[in-house]
Image 1 (cartoon, rainbow, N blue to C red):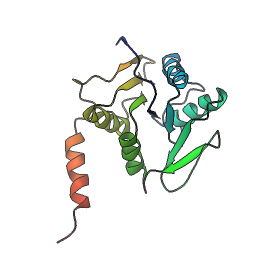
Image 2 (image 1 turned 60 degrees about the vertical axis):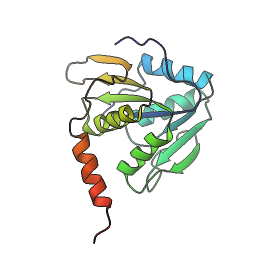
Image 3 (image 1 turned 90 degrees about the vertical axis):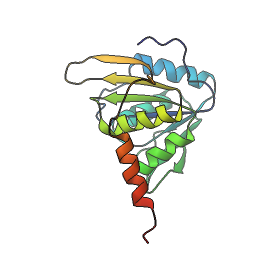
Length: 173
């Protein structure tokens, strides 16, 4: 995919990705989008999980960026820049769902078609949030990147999971 224009400007930019991301630094296309957003003064929302989130935090810290919110569930596992924190939920699923609702746009690193990230991509797509996706396959080393494709199905079980989640929340009669 070729990116026509970056969406990463102003507002709240969510930085999210797979815990399976093991590289020591972010891919160049991801850094470029983050740099553009920093130049525009975007608020970065990033989690504190292993993998991609830690690389995001390390990069923001190395650049001296301070307009960062570290989103978490019950407790903080990592906060590289001693930034402001926000409790987004009681568990990781709720944290991710609420972080997605709170952002204006997103940069997502998706490794080996992770099911959790696929679900989050589907949510971002359905909410119409501009999203830059960096896909990487550990198996064959291939990478793809570009804007979220509104015609692509990222999680074919999304509707079923959402219906199940909503039924669990209904009061018992």
